Length: 529
Image 1 (cartoon, rainbow, N blue to C red):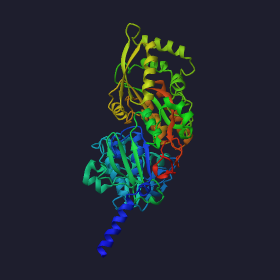
Image 2 (cartoon, rainbow, N blue to C red; image 1 turned 60 degrees about the vertical axis):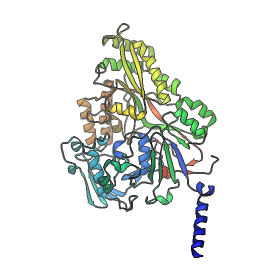
Image 3 (tube, helix red, strand yellow; image 1 turned 180 degrees about the vertical axis):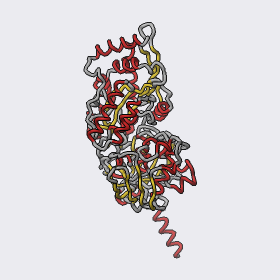
Image 4 (tube, rainbow, N blue to C red; image 1 turned 120 degrees about the horizontal axis):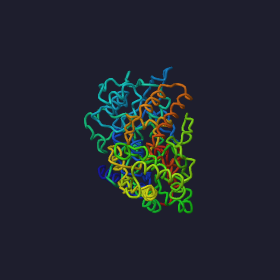
């Protein structure tokens, strides 16, 4: 009788768990997320769509608050030396998802792996501020020489090459995340598969169906799990933002990042409460491959800059209120005076075209000898429309462009390996400082797609690194930006806005200049879907 009673209770419990009300008890957020991730390993990602996912899984020394400002993360507190070059982080008492403690050694292990040349991490340069990091990445020193030391399990001392007032923001970046040392040593690069993954963040990966979705579930061992209100988050790659909007209207997505600019009029009329826009620490640009002719010729680069009609793109094609870009560093970046600009900004467009034609003729081109080249861009509908406009803008200056379209992951791989003539790109800040933009032009930068090299720029950026006075540092950076603009290394096109769609029942979303909204801060109100 006792066995029968127990069996009956178990059957009743199973039946209760299968009821719709029990199913509704799990809170699920569906996020449209730009592109397919290349990895869940923080050492092998570089896109914001990947950082969105991995930032829900792993947590650095500092982490983002709801407005993406730095707050204590794996480190509960820290001290900085008087010269600004030594930081001591005190690791909070928290666990990996397998129940083992997160230690200072896990950070040292992760950073040494990142910088090991055998890892071939594309973002290794994000740690060059740490003592000896660049020499290690270039194979000149062993990983043991890195200026990061675990004094004990919960004390991490980090020595820097130079003062870095932006270090806490940089410490939120995925390259600075810890790794579960024991698991990585046992599994190698396979540790990042969902079945093997161990996390210290709010969520754990449950499954990854390629080109369909990545599902994360709440990590019960996260130190602040009691305040994480969404049980499951599903990230969907949405390369086609127009198709993604249809999915959102059908109730399949709660959040879409980004939305298609082509839909902005409809959205303003029909879904105004869902639109989340505002300034973004980001710039869109066209990269030149400086190691392919004729883009080693500054006259050709200047001509293309002149003929690119920025005002038409922002006002007629996109209509999002984004400012045209005649510089590299966006407005209102912290501790930066601004004021640099491409010198022809005051010219009217007809005068620009006339000068562009003159420069192309001087470079050997003209009506009977047109430049034939390619422009690599992504499948995003907005980028397709911009590409067609760019193609049209170049015809009057004797340039014929073939458009090459790829998924966003493939596009950035092409840029990384210099497989392009002209390439569409954007840079979204890793930290709020002009150096994050201008550092792209160092001869050693991993994101210097055109392989630009100017010793004067390298020198100014190096001096800015060592300068403690904020005003003097800002002036050095400004000089560097002016030199870069004079070389016409990019075609800066526009300063981006945040372009998110968030259903009104998603609570806790704070539009911010970083466009990071970690799921741990969000919640869902009851709604009709």
